[in-house]
Image 1 (cartoon, rainbow, N blue to C red):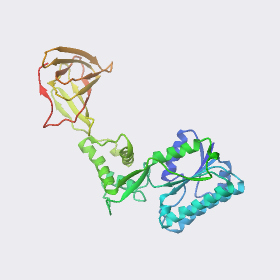
Image 2: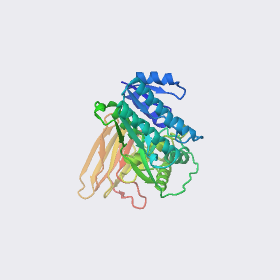
Image 3: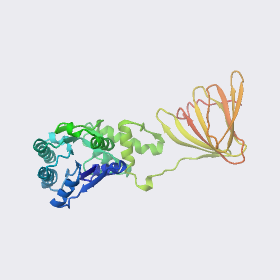
Length: 371
């Protein structure tokens, strides 16, 4: 299968070409410098068209007609002339509901494709996309998400005219996944000739909440408290935010707590899943010697040799075990048992540590008790 992609240099186009490459799907592209004959040859060799090209914020309003309507009309005329019934994915816009030059031009383009579907029986998959966001979206252009992410990353101001306006958003990865699923679908010719489709999920967020969330991403470097970035809109926004990092922002330092025993560094804190840290210990050094009422800790020795000792603070029962960096082993602390860890090797010991709650200096739930 060979896919012809128009608008390949745009935001959606760049992401689509990358995914087509990952899926080993052959593609060709239409350039604005192509002649009519160039376009005809490419259409004639294609099995599928993804029509993304179009103007959405040109300097001259006449470009709406040229790029959104006339190119679509040219594609339709070539298909009719070739008697080609290859399917088409068209990226339209929810703006067709609004009486503005961009929306009107997209509506006219849809009408051209609808006519093609009736006269030539091509399968047209029409996507009226809301605001699409994600990596490589141009900031300070037509995406508030891209603008907020870029400006906040780079310490530039953002302008909010009405913080209560609700945005309807779709994430670029979901758009591309939807397009790829249609490209791979086997029974396209059994579908309706012209049908409107949606990309799911669609997210709704106010402009004010969007700005607040992106500022929290920025603050996380200072607070070390990561937002809940594992799923949904927050995951997609965080990925988008990171995509506007310049290379010098790829890293940032952490505070080291150094004493005669070694170093202790808090790496990452979460809202409701504890925190991650690591520490070192010189040979012969013992760390710990305390118990917790509720806190749980999980230790992983990644370098060196360790001996863990435990004592039940009520029964005085004692237990010990040894681990090392050669054989990864999670060692748990249990409420009501005092515990410590000793470097029994000849080299520095390094240990990863997860605690199920962020350390609270006022309520540490940590009580000294000899093991």
